[in-house]
Image (cartoon, one colour):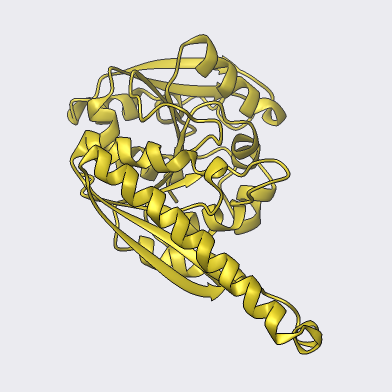
Length: 277
């Protein structure tokens, strides 16, 4: 069950697609929602700080605090309109330390929600990556163009037989149980073409059926380098509303955001993506 959610609040109003999205999840599950806004002290090298006039540094810190408070005000107003149980926190920190702090906080929540990094603007890659690997909890990333709340009309679960995919499916069970349709999507390539039921999805489909989640197994062929496009094309052709990612590139820290299928998905997502590790 999802009982509490934590969200990273964006300073700029144009980048906070995840806020209304997180509220919609809280409404759907009747959960508590916590919004966290960071007020940053610039992370300059020591010699730069020594040369920087104190009043300039103080102005930069004050500006970040004002932006964080504005984000909290928007969050509080949106939560009040939806009548969900909500709280906020403003944390002062050096910029580079924020991802690790958020990941520790996220350990006490069932789900984290983020906005996708936006080209040439908000970069949330470090925050997402650190939460994925250090919180021990699942997360959802909403596209930066997301307008709608959470929709569970058709959930596409990407299955490659890996332990990470199995973990993701287990963590996503509360969402899968509410979905109108669930597709178990297998991208056929050198990794998944093995002749066994595990990778072909038969056993996983049976397991999910024990949780009263009925799935349809679907397969698409794609070379290893084109898995992301194969998934997104399937989602588009079948009106998918949420992707559950498990394998396909989860590995060492930098492989997730800087290499592999998950990195490509974070850049090209067209619907929200649920992930665990």
